[in-house]
Amino acid sequence: WQAAEPKFAMAESVRAALALVARGEAPLGIVYSTDAKVEPGVRIVGTFPADSHPAIIYPVAATATAKPEAASYLAFLRSSAARTIFEKYGFAFLVSPTT
Image 1 (cartoon, rainbow, N blue to C red):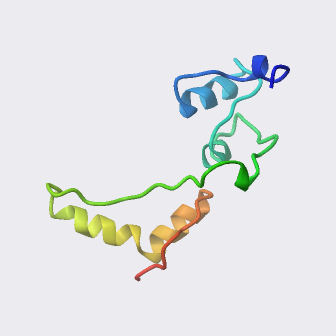
Image 2: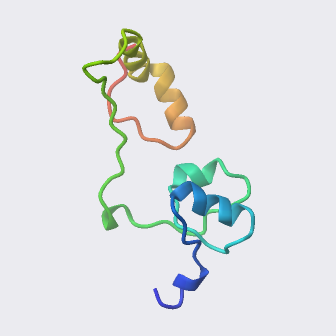
């Protein structure tokens, strides 16, 4: 780590680190692969083994004060169409589509 650390983009967020690397202001950054895959200004040079960290999961739920439209949005997120979009951008779909 001591040899690699000075080469990394240390930033406030993953998106900020990605921007630094994409602009050539830092030679390396640790970011989510899904972010790196859609940024043409970077290339993935390595990945962490899946068993080296907890799984990264993005849960979704409606709050008690959610507007009625939230139910249809949640239904869309469980659809085959949403699965296609998520997978296109490198995300794994963890539920079986309902439509």
